[in-house]
Length: 250
Image (tube, rainbow, N blue to C red; front, side, top):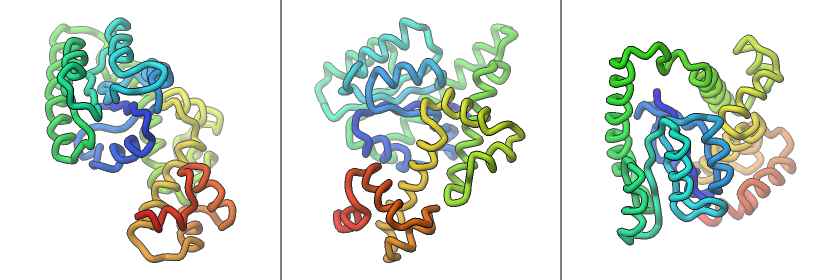
């Protein structure tokens, strides 16, 4: 399973990419995300992804500057750039840094899947070359890779049990302390346990608001918020609009 990091200054684009395909079925897991180039660079250094999918236009560092840093630091990652602009200059600027592909917004499912197949072949070929060199440190033996895998397994569990999970329950399931769970998730994704839990619950709430006619109170309870008014507050803080306004906008 390869690890992918997403960077785009538009939160809704990030959300769309996350939900566009079944990443695990395609052989990838999302290990982190960021909405500006500076945070993306910091989190990429911590998470060591196999693939970086980055927008070109971002605050802090733009996508080309971000890719340049990745290459200068000799980080072992494939890069795919995405942009809302169709000018060839953008594609050429990315391709000169050895980017695996260039996608235009909006990104469609078929295009992304095709891109991932291409990237997977490149990663597989690289892995075979590394093993053929007889190096003693393989992907599976690197400490960050092992810890990163644990972090992803935690997030899979969190997203599956988003309505009832707690840090204590997560710690018990993975045989470690609550503080260790918190540190591993933060170190390997750049976001806290609470951030991931909020994201999982809000995404599910959005899905239910879109695809069902259940009341907002019922949805709040289903996604883990027994307090209806607290749910209203966190939903608006996360999305910028109330649940009812979100439903009306669909």
